[in-house]
Amino acid sequence: MKVILNQDVKGLGKKGELVNTSDGYARNFLFPRKLASEANSQAMTELQNRENSKKHKIAVETQEAKDAAAKIEGKIIKVTAKAGQGGRLFGSVTSKEIAAEMKNQFGIDIDRRKITVNDIKAFGTYPATVKLYQGVTAEFKVAVSEA
Image (cartoon, rainbow, N blue to C red):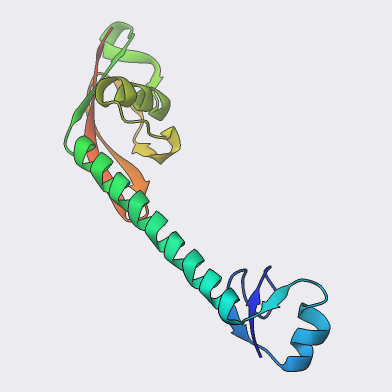
């Protein structure tokens, strides 16, 4: 019997999957516990619509990430910081500060956890990358100057 899972079932499948089970297992275990529903034509249509919706959402998010990557790719983010003698910074420039400057300069709101940069503890220009979406990354430079 073909059923559509309403919840994850260990050893059978994940929520939303169409699986084939024995008739007794479906009638006596899955249906009474509301773990699955019968795969009739209406349920199959709803499953297909959900899958199409998911694919469309992923396509839209990927395109938005590619557009943002095109805006960021190869750009220089200018960050100012205070420093002591010898050009050593008080502390370091963090990804949080880089994300804030990126929003100010380019209007792109990026989560600080997606920015990868080595420790910046002196003035200069440093390479950095940002992972916008699965498979979509952009490289840019961070220019640190005196405040």
